[in-house]
Image (cartoon, rainbow, N blue to C red; front, side):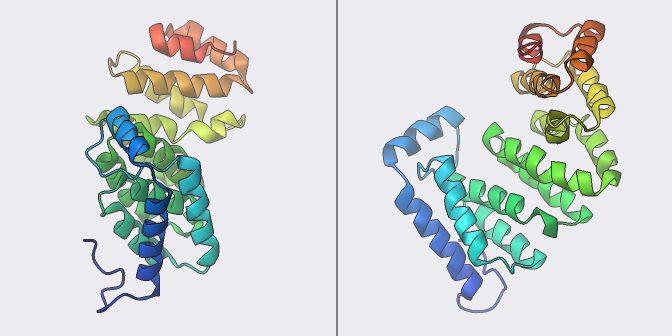
Length: 235
C-alpha cells in the first residue's frame, strides 16, 4: 500500500484523486489484454490491461482537474502511482511527469534516473527519456554531465535513455547531434538489441529533416545490421 500523499492521517483530496484514477484505470482494463501485455513485456508488475491511449485520456482529464498542482504534489503523486506495482499506474506516473514537466527542477534528474532504472521496459523508458528527461535537459543544459554518465552506465536501459533523451529536438531538425554522435559511436559495438535499435531510431528520425547529416554519419561510422536498417529507412 503506498504511503499517504502528504503524511496526514486519513485520505486528503489528492490521495482520493489518485485512488479515483486507479479505479478508473481498473474499469477500463481487460483481463485478456492484461495477460497478453504482461507476457509480451515480460513484466513482473500487475497489469490491468488498459490501452495506452485510454491511460493518456484519463491522465489528461486528471491533469485538467488539478491544473494547480505544485511540484511537491506532483512528486508525491508520482511516488504513489509508481509505488503501487501496477503497470498502468506507472504509465500514468510517466504521463503526469509529461503533463507537468514545467514544474520539475534540475535536481529531479535524480528521480527520473531512479524511475528509468526501476522501469526495466522500453514501454516506460521511452516516455521518461525523450519526453521527461529530454524536456528537462532542454531547460537545463548543465544536465549534459548526467547524460554523459548515463551513456557509460552498465545498465543498458540507462544507456538507451541517454540516447533517447536527445531524440525529439533531433527529430525536429535541431538538437545536439554532436552529443548523440559521441554516445552512438561508443555504443556501436554493443550487442544489446535495445541499444542498437535506439541508435538506429534516432538516426532515422534525424534523417527526416537532415538526411545528408545522417548519410555522412553512416558512411563514417559504418553501422551494420539492425542499426543500419533503422538508420537508412528514409534515405
